[in-house]
Length: 227
Length: 244
View 1 (cartoon, rainbow over the protein chains, first blue to last red):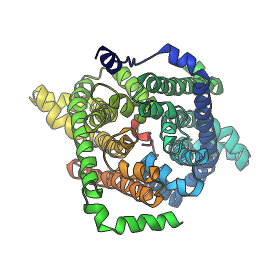
View 2 (tube, rainbow over the protein chains, first blue to last red):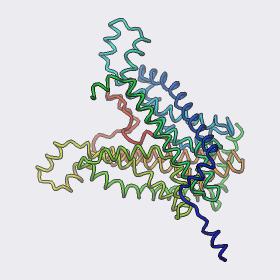
View 3 (spheres, chains in turn yellow, red):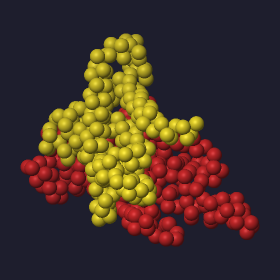
View 4 (cartoon, rainbow over the protein chains, first blue to last red):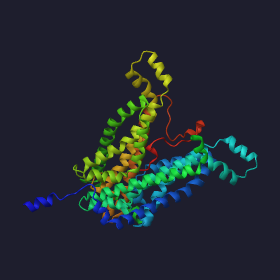
C-alpha cells in the first residue's frame, strides 16, 4: 500500500537539471537538427524570395497573385502542410525543410516587396540619370534602402521558423520538438517537455538578437541618425 | 500519387463522415474548441486592448508580448497544458489555444485604438460625448478594421493550431492526420490534411466576410490590395505575419 502510494506520487518536476546533464548529447543532437533546418529554410527562402519580390515590384500583374498566393499558403496549417509533402519525400528532414521554406518564402516575399516598394522613385531615377545600370542600381541603391524591411522580414521568418520546426515531429524530424512530444509520450515526462520548450524559446531569441546585431552592423547610417 | 487517390476515396465514403468519431463528430469538436478559445481570448484581450489603446500606454509591453509569443512554439504550449494538472484533452487544448489567441487580438486592438486621431476624439468630447460614448461611437468604428484583423488572425490561427493538439492526445480533425500517419494509411492522413487546411481557409474567408459586414465606411477586402489606391504594401503590423 505504502509502496503503491510512492509509485503514484513519483515526482514529475517541471524542470530537472539532472535530466539536462544526463541527456546532454541527445539534446545537442536535436538542437543541431533544429538549427540546421532553420538556417537552411531561411537561406533557401531568401534565395527564392528575392527574385520573386524583384519581379513582383516590376509588374503590377504579378504583385496581386503573389500576395494572394502568399495569403493562402499562410493559412494552411503546418501539420497539414507536412502531411501534404510527406508522400513525396517520406520520413526525411527534407519533408520538414520544404514546408518551412514555403512559410519563410511567404513572409520574406511580403517584406522584401514592401522594402523595395519603399525605395523612393526619385532616388532610383537620380541613380539612373547618373548612369547606374540595373545591377548596380539594385546593389547600391535598392538593397541599402530596403535593408531595414529586409532584416525585419528575416527576423520574423527566423523566429517563426524556429517555432514551426517543432511540428516536424509528425515525420520524426522536429528538432527540439522531438523532446516536447517525446516527453509527452514518455508518460508525460515534464522535465523533457520543458527542456525542449526552453530550448526553442532561447534559440529563437538568440537568433533574433544575432539578426538585430547584423542589422546594426549593416546599417551604420541608421545608427548615427539615432545617436 | 496513389495516396492522393486514396484520400479522395476516404473523403467520398459517407461512413467516414457519419460514424461515431467520424469526420462530422471531429469537425464539431474542432469547431467547439476553437470557438470557445477565440471567445475566451476576446473576452480577455479586447477590454485590455481598448483600455491601453485609448490611453496610449503600454505599447512596449504589448510589442514585447507579441514578440515573445511568436517565439513560443504552439506545440510546446499545447503540450505544457496537456501535462499540467488539467490533464490532456479538450479543456487543456482550449486553454492553450485561448492563450495563443490573445496576442494578435490584443496587439491589433491596441494599435487600432491608439491610432484614432486625437482631434477626432477631442471634437467628440467637445460635442458633449461622455468617455464611454467616445469609445463606443468614435473609437470603435475607426478601430474596427484592425480589431477585426486581430480577431480574424487569432481565429484562423486557433483553427489551424487545434489540429496540432492531436499530436499530444487532443481531439479535433488533427486526429485524422495523426491516426492516418500512425497506421501508415497515408490516404487517410492526406484526407485529414485537406480537411484541416480547408477548414482554416473557410474560417479565413468567413471572417473576412464578417469583417466586411461589421466595418463601417469604405468597404475593402484585405486582398483587394492597397496597391490600386497607390499605397505601398505594408506587412500587417502584428503577429499576423506568422504562419500557423
